[in-house]
View 1 (cartoon, one colour):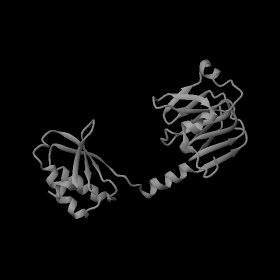
View 2 (view 1 turned 90 degrees about the vertical axis):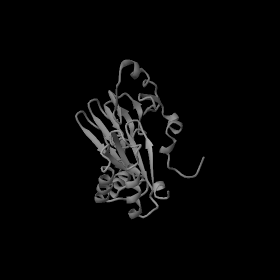
View 3 (view 1 turned 180 degrees about the horizontal axis):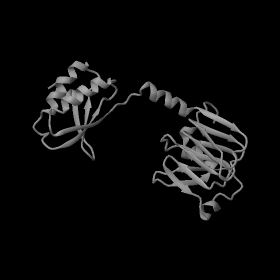
View 4 (view 1 turned 90 degrees about the horizontal axis):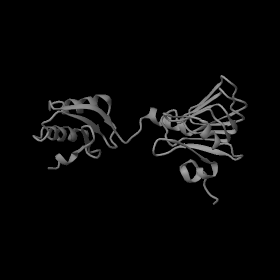
Length: 223
């Protein structure tokens, strides 16, 4: 009974997820997994994802787990996930949380990129482009194109002293600025664009950013 508790199965939209205990020894996990995938109830063709929780497994260990699951001809392993970061993923996360500053005008045909947040002190001219893995902040007029969250960050924002962009993109959502949207940006105040939960890009006053994305502020102290 104890061995069976080391492996839990949960259904998802497409297939099953096998949750493997991360506290026991790896050697204990193997017979428990063998017993679980041998259960008579698993008798239909199903895609399986292995979830390791907080256990780190090498590629050879993941291959070994996959081979055990494959002893049941109805189960097909499609991937493995975990709740831990590899060194590469950790390094990428650090890069995305850093900020880079560009001072000057981003001219037509020029592209300025940053791994993390990008701060532009100057204007972004028409046909100029700024891209960032994090958020984009323009201390000037944004009249070109801006792409925030290039690495998949859907919480990234685009903010500017004057938002007149021809094109806004956050993660993989694109918004071409129409006359109607541009009219929202004709007020003499700083504005921001963010990705709503419904998948659309919304433009709002910059003052609302602290409520929309409170996690952006890392300042400690004050009120």
